[in-house]
Length: 271
Image (cartoon, rainbow, N blue to C red; front, side, top):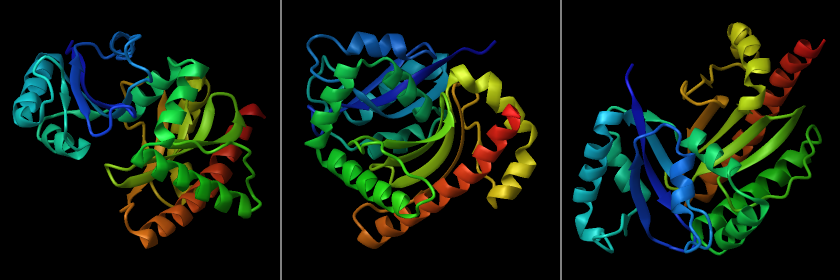
């Protein structure tokens, strides 16, 4: 059986402008994240991109990135580089890989304590991307609540996602964004504790669900992940006010469609 590892790109709000390029020879990245988040690091690292590659290729790919950005390396004994995330992603896309960013983000968040999350939120609020994220979700919540079809009391935070409850434990409609990747998206997120209950029945009705949505979302983008998603996304330039405005309207529209279709499907399972 082929073994796989993960190459990841991490940032930290208290280390602006730096990207950590690393790898782990295991698909479970939680152990590696615990090793990185030591008492010498004030807030948790954030995963900006992670890809699943053949374990035999992990070190080779990591070394290729380190060599490519050697002039931007801040310390030869540390894996930190003064680059933009998209620069490293452009190189990773040349290798055969599977994007597992969403799954890694969820795994990392599940490992955090409430104090960790609070500290990260405060630090992010002061960073450039964090301010963009916070403003985006504030505007999204305002528009969603204005529809009077879904009302959420959730407080927007400076992070890459904003979840909307759908009436089931461990199941959410998750809106997400990537400032560096220049995209936004909407997905049905099913946590691993609820996967066996909900995901197989939904897959059996995939054709009917796609028809009800009016489009074909991406089902289970990362089969190796324990959590499952059904998602759709679109590109957006966050420096273009008009594009951001259109993206917000699109996210609200997609959230309402996801809510109507999937809440109906989930109710059928409970009947």
